[in-house]
Amino acid sequence: MSQRSLHLNLFLFACGHHKAAWRAPDSCADQLGNIAYYESVAQMAERGKLDAIFLADGHSADHIEDGPRWFLEPLTALAAIGRATEHIGLIGTLSSTFCTPFHAARMLASLDHISRGRMGWNVVTSMFDAEARNHGYEAMPDHAQRYARAEEFVSVVKALWDSWDTNALLCDRQGPYADPARVHAIKHQGAYFRVDGPLTVPRPPQGRPVLFQAGASPQGRALAARHAEAIYAVAHDLPAAQAYYRDIKQRVKAAGRSEPVPILPGLVTYVASTQAEARAKQQALDALLPVQSSLRQLEGFIFQDCQGWALDAPVPPLPALEDFSGPKGRYATILRIIETEQPTLRQLLGRLAAGGGHCTVVGTPDQIADHIEHWFLNEGADGFNLMPPSLPGSLDDFIEQVIPILQDRGLFRRAYQGHTLRSHLGLG
Ligand SMILES: Cc1cc2nc3c(=O)[nH]c(=O)nc-3n(C[C@H](O)[C@H](O)[C@H](O)COP(=O)(O)O)c2cc1C
Image (cartoon, rainbow, N blue to C red; front, side, top):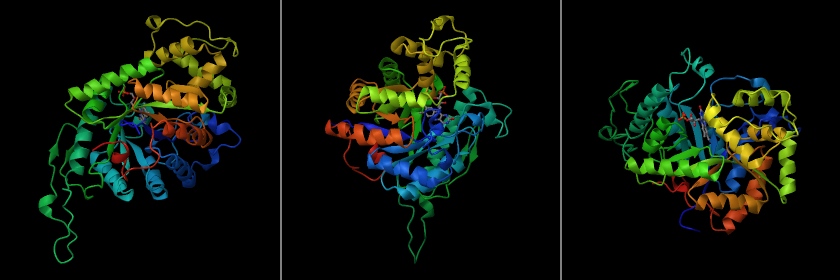
């Protein structure tokens, strides 16, 4: 095994990340309220020795006619999944805009105890006005304010976890249960929160659950550099991944931190024993997409009327990035997909329906492993956030066919070395 080891995380979402995955006749669309479904997917990921499973979260039920989004609340689901698994890490999303630090610290510390040290927290600031309107706001607080609150939120959560010293719990049946001198008030008073502490939950097994974040904006990257212990990223190709990777590593160093802070870009894979078969899997999912709503989504991204465009002809030329007045991030990704893959309109709709701007690889197990190794060895990634287009099928393909190759190449573990998420990620 090489000294630096690859980290693989499963981003477990509904019936898979392809927007039409739930429409497949054999999909689990009618099982999304059944915890046994999530448990079995997590057990499959654990068989593949993945570092963790990750559940994202949102607080609105918009466009629900287009497919499932949020069904079980993530931390509730992870409590059950933790009981059905033994080693794999469990990462849940909690919003710093809608929650309070005391709730967050308490729930995450409880789950760290329940899972015996496997908990991670993806801290998000949330995005949509429809979510804000479920939490007493008229609209989302502006971006700078969300990040200011997030900064204070994270600091308070950490202080609450630290409010119990490691050796505070004595359980001395003839004497004190806990040593009050080792359980501290935090007396926090800031712009957003007043929290006296201490936490009600004794120190979690990991000390602190592992903090994940996905920062894209300068404020997001700054928060990640100061606090995140592992980072999710979006990168369509290696140059984009490298630019983000180098920027974050440099910011972490500038923040005076020496921890590894693994960076995990999203990865959508279609795997089969030949490239033609892998393409056929992709096409089968793409064929389930309702064309009209996908076209409407594309029109929203590129500000063009696409109704007259031929579905099976190449995408017509689009205006350059400089001449585009809308949101540039997604537009730039679409331009890059068109430039590098020259897709037909139908293929472009499929690409955007599975993982959006995340990297997509269609090929044999060796080709997928080559891709992973290439990014891993060239400052593109420390690992990947796997986004199977359909579940459990695409995950099973990855676990059965790609993992053994990564293990044979000495890139990925054959067995878990420790019991905590911290130890899987190589964090102190
Ligand atoms: C893999 C990944 C998962 C994310 N999960 C969530 C989520 O569950 N909920 C959420 O509100 N935002 C989520 N986000 C969005 C990020 O938290 C962040 O808002 C986004 O990357 C934009 O960054 P910025 O806010 O710094 O501009 C996710 C982003 C990525 C890349």
